[in-house]
Image 1 (spheres, rainbow, N blue to C red):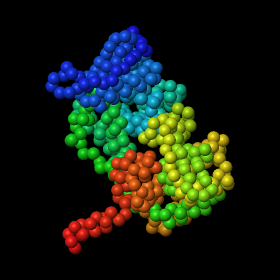
Image 2: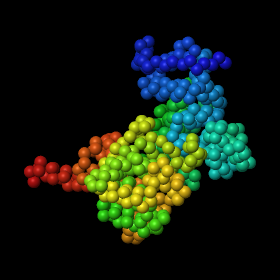
Image 3: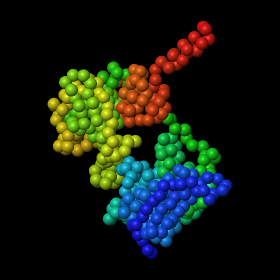
Image 4: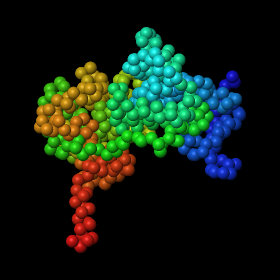
Length: 457
């Protein structure tokens, strides 16, 4: 097999030779030999071109005869569904965020056990899932060197009974996969958002198979209209949103959880409420990111986020990934003005607790990034102190993330223009207004008044 790293790409262009309908052509050159592939839509062409470009960026060699990179050749040579998804994951892993890796393997570990020729002799469902998540669906260099006998047995069973990839072209097979995605391990219905996330991963794998011409088309496109998908709540439940008085009482309660446990986290939660930060952005905040004047408003300049995913999914081997801001290019920053209340809280925090070696404002007792389990436990105890029994039993501020919901709702109801709120929050305007539509107060009364005046009543 003759291989080369001499690869060149051209812009996608409409295929002028197509007379029936407009198609799009991807063109590239490998070792001086031109290649092309035609797609029915520009989006499909872009996806294929991006796959080629990412393979070149990873330093893969391309086969001169087919024009495809090593990862795509491995996927095309895979006979079974399991072999194909293993090749798919290996191609996506290097440039995927840790949470994306986690989500990808989670979805495929849900659907792969049902895509088998015969379920006879199947190990325990939990064992099969563990074998997929902790071994079979990891790149070869990420797998443990000495898996347990139970995992080895489960992987052998999967390799033996995994469906041929071509079987995914059958509607009944895809329906069985969708049924699996819609259920939890205990057989109860999965949350709508969970189903949508897993279905998106499944769709992308099938789309990759279609790009490589291993399937005639993405079968999910054909059955979309026949499948009743669980409805997904797009808007924030206004019942979780605290008012300013409740927010301040909760922050005060955090300080009473304990000097070593709660008090160092008062400023962490305050960043979520007064600045609308995501938890991953808050735990990554450094002193050098903060402009904290003696009086008036300050500014936070955000550049990184440290979402918690697990050591298995990060390149560093740490529990927290280190990545750029959500929906922004690498190294792109976001400035968030902060009110005097938060400026004072941060100044007091730095004076009392100092900062980590790298300037992080918040750290564990060992100097590490604050874990979500730690601040969730503190928040749970603070709710018990600050809220009435009825409120504790309600969704009100049930999670630390609800402080961000409260912040954005407050800004919108205060009359701040949506583009400004979106800029501070790191959202698009469309997503902002869609998600917080139910949290806007007074819209119904304003609309009723306008209708009344129009009716002359």
